[in-house]
View 1 (cartoon, helix red, strand yellow):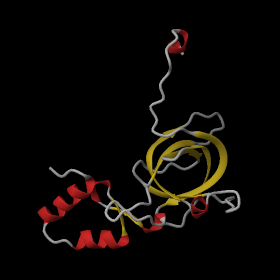
View 2 (cartoon, one colour):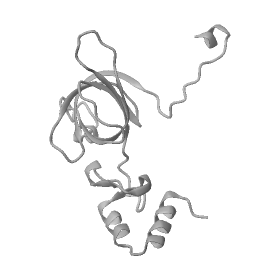
View 3 (cartoon, one colour):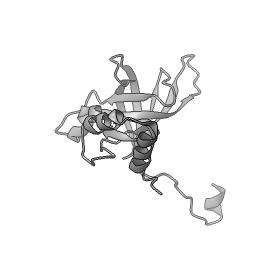
View 4 (cartoon, rainbow, N blue to C red):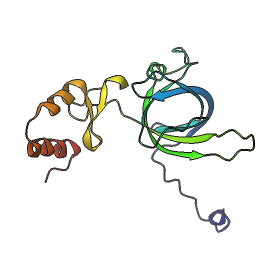
Length: 162
C-alpha cells in the first residue's frame, strides 16, 4: 500500500485478469476416476485458484469438473471440464484442525502445437518440453527414429530453430 500513498500505480503482473467466484468443483489426477471436492475461488483465461482438503503435487496434471455446469448458463467447453497443471500447492492457515490447501492451476491448452487444430482437452497430450500435441501429431513424433532427429523436431515445434 506504500506505493498507493506515494501516488504510484500498483502493477498487476498477471497475464490474465482474474474473476472472483465461489463455485464448487471436483478434480482428479488426470486419467483417474477418484474425484475430490474443492471450491474455485477465482478463474482467468489462463488458470484458476481453488481450495481443497487434499493436496495434489506440483506438476500433476489434473482434470477439473464443474458439477453444477449447465450448457444454458456456461460455455459448453467449460461443461466438458478443464485439464490443468498444478503450478503450486500451499497449506492454508485455519483454526478448525483440518488441513486445507490453496491450489494454483494453469490450464493446459487444447490447441495442437504442430497442426494448430483445436481438440477436446482429453485428446491433447503433453509431450517432452511442454509441447501440446493431438493424438495424430503425438503419434508421428513418437514414431521418429533417431534421438538427434527427434530433438530437432521438438526444437522446431518449440520455435527454437536457429
